[in-house]
Structures are given as structure tokens and as C-alpha cells.
Image (cartoon, rainbow, N blue to C red; front, side, top):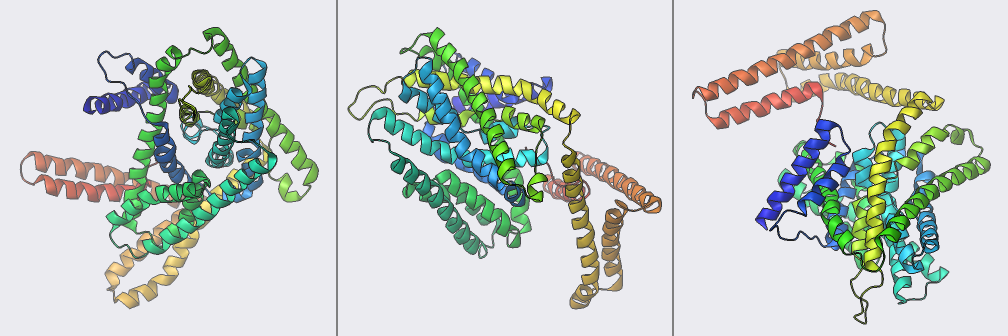
Length: 533
């Protein structure tokens, strides 16, 4: 067990280092490294229960994504997100199922593959979606948060059809979707409300952080208990906590949560792609119910059908909306053909698709082997790899094409976002300065400290005002920028001196750690928080 953990850890580090060093697609490098690891002699077989991915990895990753997505951005494009996260998944799944059946797969097997590759993968979108405009990224991320729930319902129905356990009717299918989505949303809101109420009374930031780490699992398993969508419950809980959390979560908890969640998300994302590679050789060797040539042809056909179905659905829905909704606000949300091409190409499939197909039982209820399970796993694996390879290589080119043909509205949207940030900084500084005399009086602060605090906030206001002011203020902003640069160099110098004192034996390591923490916080004040992937 220990050697397996060491190998996995080393593979993740090596794969990501190679990708970063040579500017390669990290998920593909991790898949290749995983495949190579599987050939290491005398290494015990590395297996992960697919249910572990769906019930542990997925809730954690989706919860983190939900905590860091703009709810207002979702509201602005709610209709498109819901259509992409529900109807598009169904359309893609059915289209893939029909094409798969046409190229020689059984309808049950083809529908299972369609359900698995119907949803986009949130981890792949986050890893490969560099350069996409923030507003498009919100739609893609939000879509990938929702469509997993849809796909799992479609997959469950396809599984019932493939095993003839239940006769699939329109009433049965609609009832399953309603229970899944409505039940998941209700559970998510309820869990968020309860967690927020309890969280207000938890004073220890370590306990509070641990408590919030188990929140997605509470939402997921409660929803699953009533056969609702655990995925949607996690997402709704995350969105709810993102709105109410800032009102009661302590500074210590926030300071601790971002790096912890960020590192955990990074490792889990990398592990998922590594597992794809680890299973790949066994998937190829395990293909017994079909010829390799036919399976490869089916993989290519299904991949093309999947991409074409995504494009057709997107273009059709856009035209229907434009025809039916003539409001001025709708016209402001219109996208160009190049932006829609980005959305199509950025619809990556990833490890979640494989986790879904690996969850297919090996045997039926009567003990017989599940028909064509090896074929389903092979084709789905091939589609995922093609998605990462083809779309990963195409996306930068498509994004570049979009930047050469920008949407006239995008500049307005970007300007509006920038103005919001400036307004937030300026208004906050103004109101703090208004409150300052009363705060000084309440705390009975001497004039000297009060003046120094006032000077700091006046400096913040000067920076914010200079963003929109004339040359005189811009000169002041340049002075502030130079001052910040000097402060950063002074901090670097202080760090070196404190290390020299430790190395000379004049101070203890504990003193060094305490001082380094202070310098880190001071630097963060100047440069802002660390950007987590």
C-alpha cells in the first residue's frame, strides 16, 4: 500500500512537472504517465472503486467549484446553463446511442456509452480552459456542475434498459428526472441552511474548517438516500454557502480553507487523469466481446457524433431563443459563432465519464456477465482520450480565432467587470474613512495610531480614485506603485536577514517560522491572495 502511494505521488509530480516544463496538456501527460506506471514490474495492481470516485472525489471537486463560481453570473445565463446541463446531455446521449447502434453496437451498450459521455467534465474544463473569456467560463463551469446529475439519471435509465429490469416509459423517465433535480435542490438548500446555522456557533477555526470539509458528503449522501441527485445537492449547498459564508466565516477559516481546498482539488484532479492511464492497458487487454478494429472505428464515430450533437444542439437552441425572446436584455447576451465554437470545443470529457462506466456491474442479477461491458469501457475510454487530445490541441487555436474576431459586447462586459472592482475598492475605502472617527472614539485610540490607520485607508482610496482620474492622480498612483515595489523588496531583505540570524544560531527555528509568517502576511497585503488552480 505504501509503495503504491509513493508511486502515485511521484507520478502526479512528474506528470505535472513535464507538462509545465514543456507546455503540454497536463491531463494527457498524466494519462501517459499512468499508462507507463501500469507496466512497472512487481507493482501491485492499482485499482480504485468507481463508487469512490462518484461518492468521494466528485462531491469534493464539485463543492469547491460551486464555492468559487459567480452566482450572479449563473443568474445572467441561467437559461443557457440549464438547457446545456439537462437537455443537451439527453440530446448528446441519445445521438451517441443511435450512432453507436448504427455502427454495430447493441442499443443498450450504445445508450450506456452516450450517458457516460453526455456530460462535460468540470475537472477537465478547469484544467484546459485557459484563455476562455470569464463569462464563457462561468457557463462552461456551471454547465459541468449540473450535467453530471443529468447524466447519472440518464445512465441509471440506460442501465435499466440494458438489463431489462424495468420497462422504460416516459412517465418513469420524467419522474426520475423530477425526483433527481427537485429533490437534489431541496436537500442542497436544507443542508446549506442547517450548516450555516450550526457554523455560526463553531468558534474554533480548525473545527469549522473540518466541519466544512464534510459538508459536501452530508449533502451528497442525504440526497442519495431519497434517490435524488447527490451531485445537484452538493452544488446547491456550495452555491448557498458561497452567499452566506462571508457573513460568519472567520478570517482564520478563510485563510486556511483556500490553500487546503486548492491543493486537495489539484491532487484529486491529477489523480483522476492518472487513473485513466492506469486503467488504459487493462482496458485494451480486456476487450474480448469485440474486435479491436471495430471498437476503434466505433470510438471515432461516437466521438464525432458527440461533438456534432453538441454543436447542433447549441446552434438550434440559440436560434430558437433569438426567435422567441426579442427583449433588449437578451440581445445584450448574444454570442458570436466563434464564441459558440469555443463552447463546443471546450466541452471536454474526462475521468468522471470513466468512473460512470466502470460502475457498471460485472454480472447481472442472475450471475451472468454483464453483456459488452468490456466494449463499453473501451469505447468510452477512447472517447475521453480523443476529447482531451483533439479538443485540447484545438482549443487554443479556437480561442485565438475568437480573440481575432471579438464580440463587440465582450469589451463592454469586461469594462463593466473592471469598473465593479474599482467601485468596490473605492466605495469601501470611502465608507471606512467615514466610520473611522466613530471607531476611534469607541476604542479611545490615541491620535498617532488613528492618523496612521487613516493614512493607510486614504492611500487605498487614492489608488482606487487614480484608476479613473487624470494625469495628476495617475502620477500619485505611480508613486504608490513604486512604494509597493520598495515594500516588497524590503520584505525580501528582511526574510534573508532573519534566515541569516537562524543560520548563525542567534535565533531558534520557532522564531524564524513566526517571523516568516508575519512577512508572508505583509506581502500578501501588497500582492493579493494566491491564485489557486
